[in-house]
View 1 (cartoon, rainbow, N blue to C red):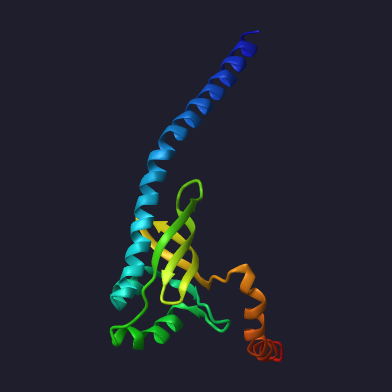
View 2: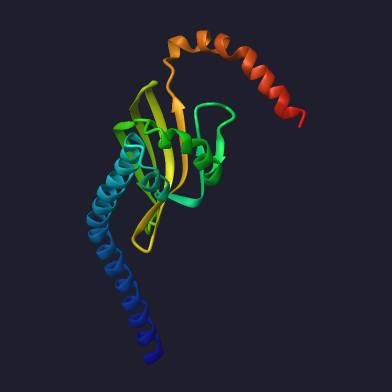
Length: 178
C-alpha cells in the first residue's frame, strides 16, 4: 500500500515536472526564436551586401568551409573553394553581384542550430529566388548550402523551354555519358 502511494506520487511528480518543463519551453521559445530570426536576417543581408560591395573576405567568411553554392546555370554546383575561384576575378574588379532580399521566410529546428530559408531577391536578372541552410554553432552563423534560381512566370515557361532545349539536350547527354 505504501509502495503503491509512493509510486503514484513519483509518477505524478514526474508528470508535473514534464508539464512544467514543457510550459517553460513554450514561454521562452518565441523570444529566442525572434532574436534568432533577427540575427539570421541581418547575417544574410550582410552576406548579400558584401557581394554588392565586392568584399571578398566578408562574403566568403560567412560560408562554411564545406558549403555548396548552386547557381542559375545547370553546371553551377560548386563546393566553396570552386565558387571562390570562380568569383575571385569579379570581386577583384570591384563588380561582384547585387542581390537584395525583398521577402524572406525563415524556419528553424527545435534547438535553432539549423535555419533554412527562402527569399525573393531583386537582382540584375530581375526577380530571383534564393534558398539555403544556415548553421548556428557557438553563437556564430555560417551558410552551409545556397541555391539561386531565376524566377519564370508560368505563362512564359513554354517559350523558356524552347530557348533552353538545345543546351539542355547537349548537357544531359554529356552528363549521362560520363
